Image 1: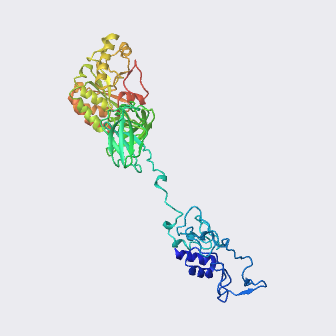
Image 2 (image 1 turned 135 degrees about the vertical axis):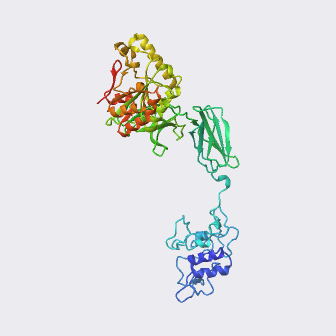
Image 3 (image 1 turned 90 degrees about the horizontal axis):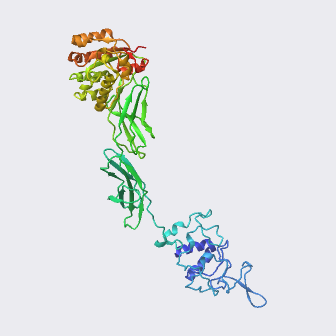
Length: 550
């Protein structure tokens, strides 16, 4: 402390004053103004007790009083009744120790007792004799010179605030998200909160009541709520506590739902050339739907996201004659997802390429799966005109036909000869087959072929749908020869043709693999009757068609 006082004194009043202060042996000194003349002698001034120093020369005036030498400034007066105004403000005497050489009245140092630490650490502003606070601004004339001598912790003017006056640290409210996961799960996630030592999660099926604790852990950032029934709405609230459980904060209540599995209802290639359009059912809680298509590597890849209430999508710029397989899943607004739908495939059709319709009558039968294997192997469609009373017996084949995108047509319920029947009898035979097919595979029938090709105006009118005949008759029912059936198709195929065969016979079923492979190699798209009609001018109920050419 004495070292700092000495340094301050040197700056403020000069070396001569310093000498007197050291001799006085105290840190609170009377005012002294002095200097050193060019010869090195101490100039005029006032001693610590207000009397001139021993080296000072005096002279007497006419009254016998001693008079200070003329080199003393005229405006400097010896007045023991007042403290010297030339003393810096920061060097006021200590309240507890009166100045031994100053008989004037000591002034208290404000409301704070002097603890021996003056303002030495503040830069001196031009040595004006007045110590001013630095206000955190460096002194231009003496920047930073005294800072190192007085560490901050010694500064009595910077007392630490009381603990009671410190601002309390509050826990921030956690923010949670509830996102659906597959198989009846909901993931609740949040970010770590500073100061939080414990996380407690509550759940309810009601928004405003009935919350129960389902999770409690330290340093957690998520929880997977399992065994949630699909479509069931839950409400979640997260409460956090500090280490001593003195403080807590609650999140806002968030709604979560495990999304149901999406269901594709249809995939159609009748949306236009090289396009596939499909639809699916609405899923409760879904804000969007992801469309996934199977790629060449066998993995499903997302190709689109449909937002809002839309439940349809059209895939464009596809390759005609090629099959594409799709799945769809519902998404919630927090990025959660439900289970993928069952896969559904469809063949894209290029209206500018050759097409042919392979048709099979009198099934389903024990041999129908052989035909279906060939169609699936090479990526082709066919139309199966089924007999109603055989559908339940071979229901697996009916469902597979529909799954492969083939068309199911009506061939009456008991292979009835319609030409000799009344309108009501015709309608009964046809409607019975429509119902049994619908029950087995869920599809509606749109075309009819009369057994033996027997029809008249009554049949056309009563059927309620287009009547489909053929342009290429393989006579497979007669020859029962695989090679003959293959040869007939190869030699007579043309763009827009309708080929007649029967999957009731094994030789015909055995010919399917070769026929389909040859047609594909020849550049044909093997399509259903309805697909061929759509891209070749269309068809209407009450009329008969045997081919569909450009």
